[in-house]
Length: 241
Image 1 (cartoon, rainbow, N blue to C red):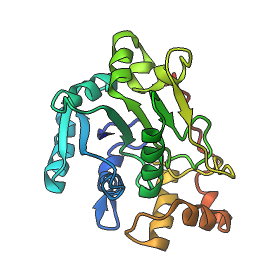
Image 2: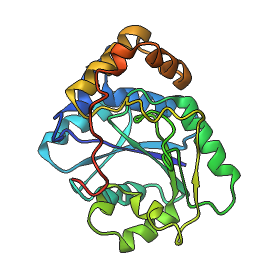
Image 3: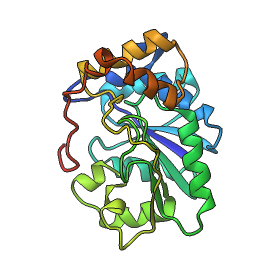
């Protein structure tokens, strides 16, 4: 199983967010560490764009000793399939986004273990339905299914990489991994300045570590002033750019 982290400096709401410094490492560095600490991946690559502004993403990958691949800006699916060209033996891909610095390696590990235990599964996600805070979700798709999607996906399905699979459930074998009770009302992803304020508050409390998801949830639940920092932020709809 190969992990692919999509990362670019361009962002309509918070430009440059993936390389913002957070407790001595970049946001991207936090995601890379969580993926590596899961110890379930056979390889890890950052899929960035061909734009000059993303040269700094490549430099960060070099600094951290992580492989990278460069491809189209909006056609992220092509970036993923391009990244797989150098990994012909890969059978499945775990998709990460570089704006989720509070990702828990244990959730990554649980998702990978579950996926491997179910024969014939094409796609697994903790987001169908969402029961974890936004920013802790994990998804896995077989390379075979990803290539099938690449042949037919258009529009926003090419931006969101896997969305064609879970919106066409009759064509793919899907599985949702849920965590009870649902805490989907919480938000720890990084899209806006308000999100950044919450993430900084978490890091100021816990330090430069991958916080276990239940410990993070418990702390947010007893600190309403912190979770209120980004409670009003609207998550973009699937079809939005």
